[in-house]
Image (tube, rainbow, N blue to C red; front, side, top):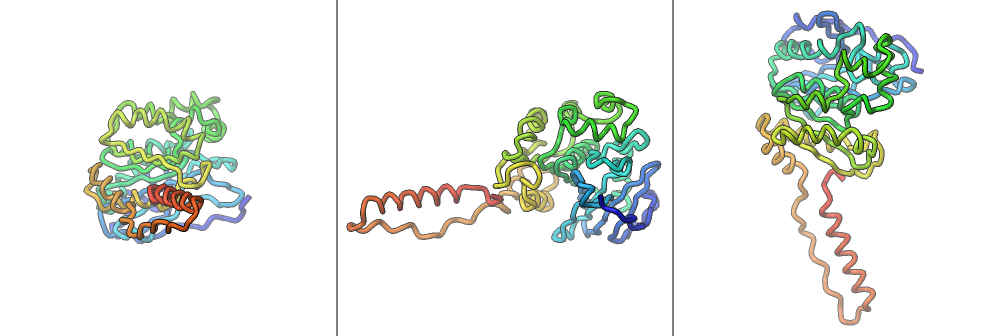
Length: 319
């Protein structure tokens, strides 16, 4: 396991943050909650809030921060480390749900609202993959008018086997995930089923069979009841399994579309994404016809090449 003391970082009360808060690593305090963050100052009125997935604690220290993007200078960016992992040394995922003595789900939306006021931002984008995707969906749900990009997320922890053991480390007196679910959200399909006022962009790899087969179906059914607020992008990017099966450029194409399109305009976002990812028109000269002396086998080869070429050109640019 990684050893060594964590670096000492400033602890700041969100209610009294300076409006010109500098880029850096902080612990933000709001009431009884303290959250480790890495902040990158932007120039516009958009705040991008980023959540990480599970953390292999034999390779990484906590707090762990998902990388921020250098090409988004117009956006304020906040990479949030899950303070739930600080509750027990064996925790690798906490879904940003906090614990018995850490009401994170209830307090974090207030922290973001207060931070947004101090930074003068009014548009927020929540991003995360896997357990971080659960957090992005959950906190965006609590922020009407926000946008979420969830990548291969867990959506129902009651049917996700690793979740119960992990969450019982944070809620040791509850005995089961069913009891934990009485105190905090574990099923986002049920939570969103009551209605939602955010916009969800849900990215799912076909190669991630467990999440594609068990986590996506019920949530997408709920999302499609409000198609004007739900975009489902399924595909295969050449990487089987769960971790890393959707490359960063696929996520960034949606993020850049959100930043450039009219806010909360589904069609505008789709058009902006298409403009960013569409292949340019093909200008390659067509293959010349076989000369009379060519054999039948050569002509078959030419037809095969043409079919393969047409197939590959129709694949999405992310592949």
